[in-house]
Length: 356
Ligand SMILES: [Mg+2]
Image (tube, rainbow, N blue to C red; front, side, top):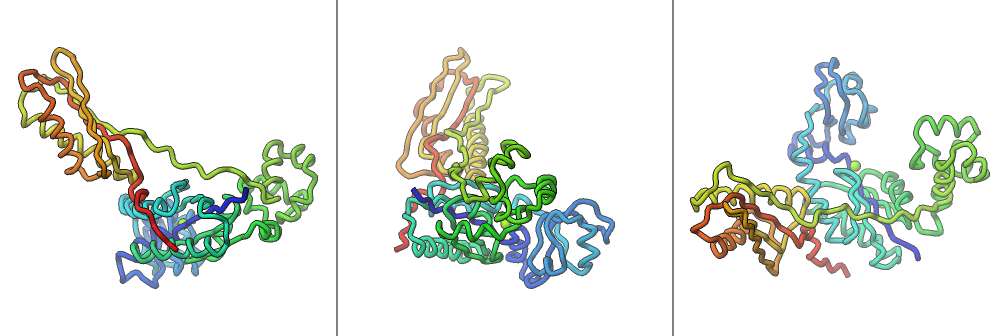
């Protein structure tokens, strides 16, 4: 059965976020990375705007070299916290389009769109809608590659950057791959590339014309893998990121506690920690569980499941606090208090988007 896989990759992500937030940087070379220290800096470029790429700058380039290429560029230190936050907002959009999302890094992911059928027109419309949603809501552009497998989708998303949209039909996969250099294949680093070049192989076409037995003899398992990829065969599934089943925090007091105020404050603090983790994973919860251990070590857990998922710390605290008021025996001292959330859902997954 044929699959429809999207590879979505944000364009010059860190630099684009900076340009969005600082209109004065727009249209200019922006380089995010280590401090260039007037050309004496150590470290590398983390990301750069398309304007900076015109100077020959790219990510992983030594920052001192970047500075020599473009001394008048805008050099910024990365603000990871800010990028992670935006990344989660974008990811929530991915989840509103597909339940099967495999994030690859802070700014790219595979989406399995097979459940929407495999008509090319539909796939293109969905991809355009996804790109528009990201751009309308967040003022950022993404490039999308659509293909019957992950490997081809990832190459496709890179071809028309920025703001690209490339679809490779099943019957076009081979002609799409054949002219590409072997360095495009997953698993071909500089060493393997050099060894293949020795065999006179520069393109994917040349690689797949080699005997499979020769490839296996020379490269072992990797040879088999490369032969399959060069023939457009890649049946690796889109693997959803493993998400926790529950998130909880608990606190053991240094002295057993009877004071309601201290319990409330502790519960508030634990709830905050839980909700921070929820938000980092772009999750919301439907079940809240309170755990109490009394001085005599008897432990009770009480939980409640609500209809609509929550993720804000005020909401989660409200539910946990109600459990505390209802089930705590006020005559007994408490040794440990804990709160956890479960029945987790991706933020945005319950919102069904009707496209057509
Ligand atoms: Mg990117």
